[in-house]
Length: 284
Image (cartoon, rainbow, N blue to C red; front, side, top):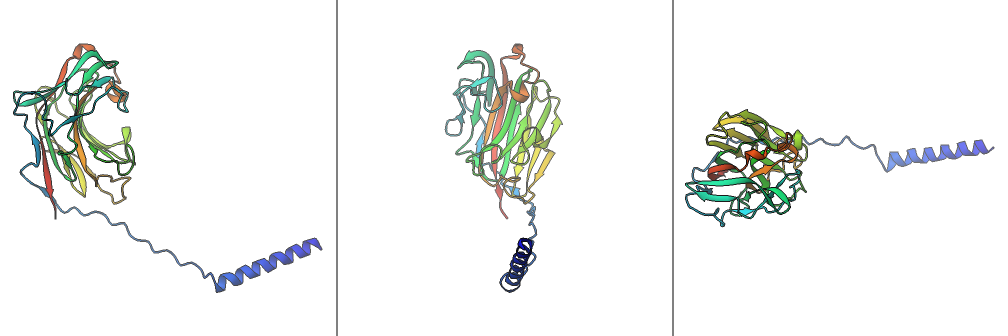
């Protein structure tokens, strides 16, 4: 009897559910799939007159209307060994900017260096960046010419993106890396490529990026090194629709630069910068 009533109750419930579905809840339609719209390469060009530049044709400290400093010895997320000073390691003379990494005790660290930042007047959304530079040498050095967002609109690193126009580590000299980082591709999984420049630490070379809504392209001495294309998948893959600014620095040690230790005999060592130039993209 108990089984009979249970079965009967279940049958009634199933019957009511079927009636309810047929009258009030019709079978759902297959959802419409909206095809992903891939960005179009419109063949953007760039203005020929820079809107932000520094040719370092003066003497003294870097122009404080164009440059500020990241200061401190926090390790900067990479376990770096240097203390970035407020300009003590950056000088302008003879038509060039010189950033010097030194072996000296300061701020609880055993090395000092400089990290120059163009945020503000030197911020941009799309355009061309050119930096002519001669790189430092020595095991444990990690020079970089790179870009970060002005505001972290999509979240903390790496969600809001990073563009590394040039990186080199001293234990692998003359092997120059162009890399982009974002929520999908970051750290050792960043997207990029490298090129050997045999005279990177003895001669000046031009490190450049062309950044448009379609792609970020890296060039060394006008040779295309890498192209990162906007896949149309939104900010996880393309947070590069916000303003970014430039950074110039020599790190010491760190998760990459310090893999083979630090040769103290290499210090002081310098990165010389002949010029920095930003050109606006001509929209279409």
